Length: 231
Image (cartoon, rainbow, N blue to C red):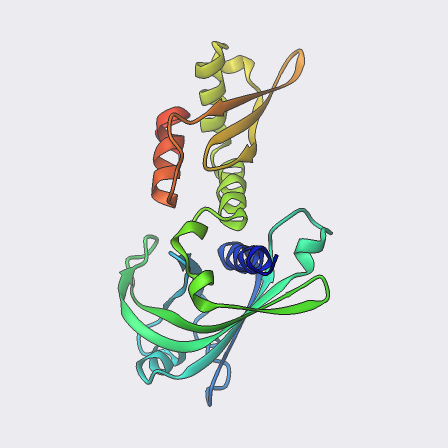
């Protein structure tokens, strides 16, 4: 039972990192480390909290000095009002400057800053649970609930036309007959799509030819099985 609880806590904590609803970063001896960079953003990269920040900014300098930090994330997983939305995870660790990236919008060169996570504390259902850092970073948690929900929500908000085209191709419908489409479920093994035609709503489930183990594999399967422009 203890092992099951530990695994469940690690998966929940990792899911929140993959799909946070709120982000709060506190850095030792640095007031407002994110205030001087309005374009600052955080993403998960293989279980590592990763920031793209302004070169020479407060966060970049703090990372260059290897300052301790505390990153607290509110949960975006589950439906609005669900108990999972009340959860949060606190990640204590050290800031590291690990490279550069270039903004896809304006071409600006920016620093990549990561949090070297040392301690993980999950707050869920009125309890605070310490999660081993190694369990939190496990490769087997790559396709956690938060990651899958983030992918599904992104596809539904940014790729509805591609989903309609995929339904038309897969179900032999005329493209103009499919007036709406969305992913209703997504796992490492399958995808479920809802769509609407003149006669009402429909749903079909598509099993993948192989089980995805990573985000890259999942993306490749979705592009192979549904539409090449899904990203």
